[in-house]
Length: 332
Image (cartoon, rainbow, N blue to C red; front, top):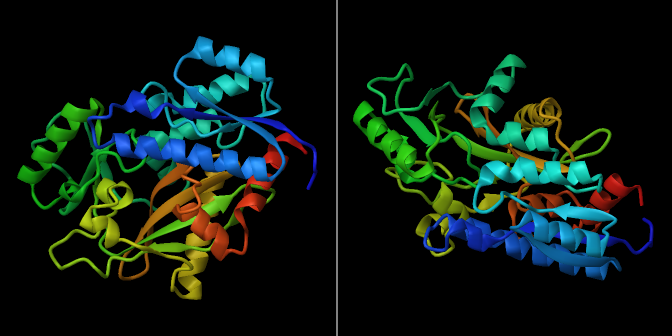
């Protein structure tokens, strides 16, 4: 690995833009912690990093011109509290011609549009749960219950909770109504796949490589609690469900299931043109049929996040991962 000292600008969205009075704000705050950890790691590696909150294009352009970065470490998950602009921020780095980490604008845009992504999965023979999309409160559904209702274009499990799984049309109407009112976007309703949940993290390269598989452990749930990973399970550290959904990595699974998960994850990464790193989320039923829930481009890479746990379980340390991203984007 080159010892050349690079000027690396760490760009992240301002958590304050998300609205501190909303619980959704908590996942935004995590981005700042992630940026701080990347900064510290780059310092230890001998580079010259700087932090930049992305909240005003003119001001940010001035910062970029002043710093003159060799590369931008892109941790932006939106702009001014709007996650749909995640792809546009990456597009800005493309227009400026500055090497940047993470996935491309088109990959970010497709992945965030869960309906489009699922249609691409179907077109390529990649299994995904049956679904419908509602722009208004439905009177009926062609899906068999239970189902999961979620916003169609959010990430970080926004809008997903224990109330997202519904057993009848009355529950579905209530869930869709609530989501339409809060998120102002179509609602994706999927057939609930009863079974296990797995995450396959991937690092880019030629070829891309799947890391050790992680499983969400639902053994702490009682029989009445839906076995899903909602917002509270991922972000609310004081919530009982956060403590009851630990990840197990490497997952304790047989060779045949592991091969299916890895090959499908790599297919998803390829079809959506992944770059640098990503994560594919799966549900697996009792017969070990696998279903892709979504592709998460630029997942949280904090040392205590699931992606980093998969790195360590695969024998890769954090600095090596960061160094690989730098080399893949700068050639240095």
